Amino acid sequence: MTLALPDMICFALYSATHAMQHVYKPLLDDLGLTYPQYLVLTALWQQDDEGRKNGQTVGALGRQVQLESNTLTPLLKRLEERGLVTRTRSETDERQVNITLTDPGRALQTRAAHIPACVLEKSGLSFDDLTRLRDQITTLRDHLRAG
Image (cartoon, rainbow, N blue to C red; front, side, top):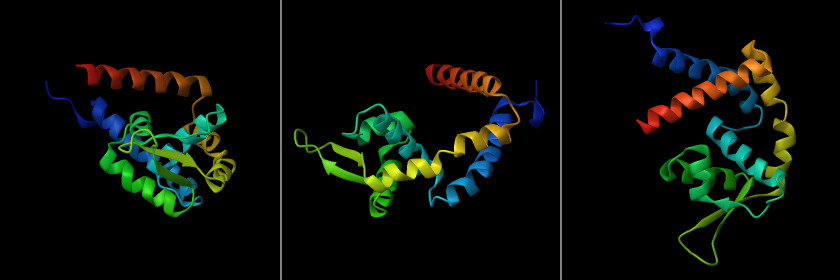
């Protein structure tokens, strides 16, 4: 059985990803960020909001945002060059590098606070519908990785 392109889940996800990137691009351009940089900063902002301001290792951050070290390291260097994060070697294990937000990195959170609402509005879905869709896609991802 051959499926037509519009009937393929992989194409639906692929084309939705491109459409989502199109929505994010102007919002992130205003902040001077790429989408992967935004994901990393979002993870660091969340940690800060939870009261854990001591940063996290590159490895832990990579697992959280699902980026490999060879992609994450240059991204973090660029964020450090912009003064948004610091990278420091762990005192207990020099193989580990800790990533911590700087004050300008924390301040950028306020400038980015409108982004989720913009994406929700552009989606045309209710918050509950978008949450259900996210959960279904996450379940699909987890099943595909497990199998």
